[in-house]
Image 1 (cartoon, rainbow, N blue to C red):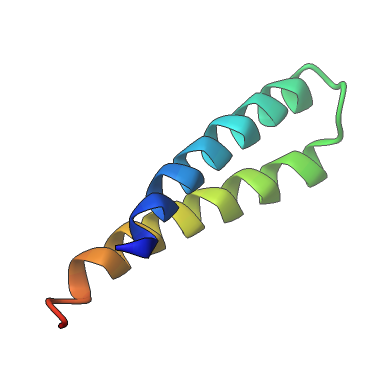
Image 2 (image 1 turned 180 degrees about the horizontal axis):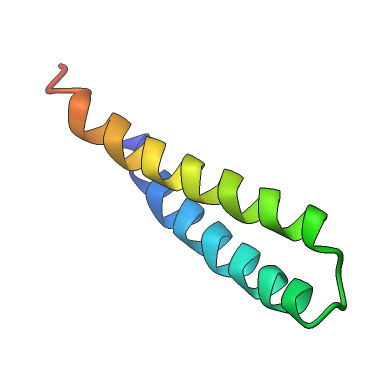
Length: 59
């Protein structure tokens, strides 16, 4: 039950990284910093959602 908040945390991280990526498109922050941050946050979100579905039922 404890790991149920991780997908929501990573969704919030993706939203924040997307905002930073928009700042990168406006040349306020370098793109080589914002784009890996966005890709890493999307990867963490997808892996946490996939891990939850494959974990199965444990007592």
